[in-house]
Length: 214
Image (tube, rainbow, N blue to C red; front, side, top):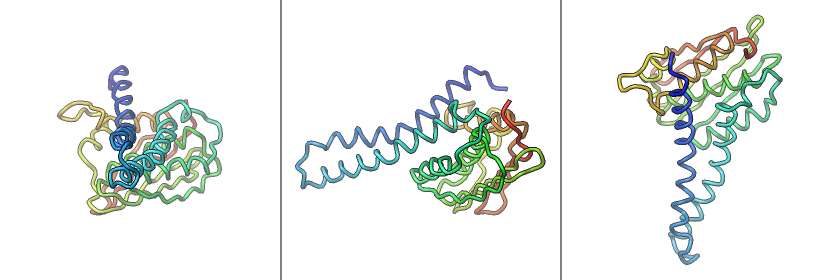
């Protein structure tokens, strides 16, 4: 297992890196905000600010759920809210989401697992694509299936080794820690995530029998 202090540091870095892109949009826009209103640079500044105003809050809401304390509760989740948070986050990364939820009851902890598996799908789609999230009853627990479809879809070595909690050749870093965290979330629910390269344009992530949070 990975050292808890190192895991905490790398997850914090992972979250900070995700948010930094929206912050960079704001700082870049401010460099041109004093340009004449009809100038191309001022128009670009306005566009950057609008983009940051959309992507920034979307990322914050999702990351609070996927990595924060909200995703540890066994109480029933608001699926409408969870879907919107996930869809807005994916839109900020130029991906789309499709849903198939037939489970009778989905908790906040279950939603966090679905979000973590969705992030694995994003990792497998460097050129964008569609992520299909299915949650169904599975005996006393729930079954999760996330399908990532798009051009150049691939399961990278760091992703696969992360799911096995095996350090990559260059060691644990903020860029490769999310699969480890995702697997730990799954294990806290009594299951594990398996990844399969189904076709050249589709990767599948599955976790079955997920119970409530410990």
